[in-house]
Length: 64
Image (cartoon, rainbow, N blue to C red; front, top):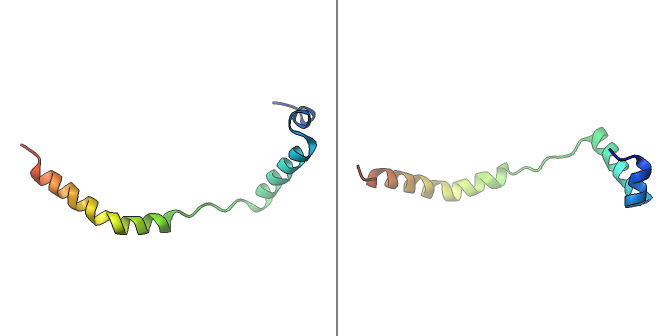
């Protein structure tokens, strides 16, 4: 694991300061997750019936 001095040498002091600031902010306040459930639900309402219909048709027309 690199030392802070090595990080500063490689990335610059300002970048290292920002990285530690961000780390502390996330530690203190957490980070809000991305909510994909609304988009996923909307997409399934649009595509779900077609997918179910196709699965049923595929099952019915499968050769025995």
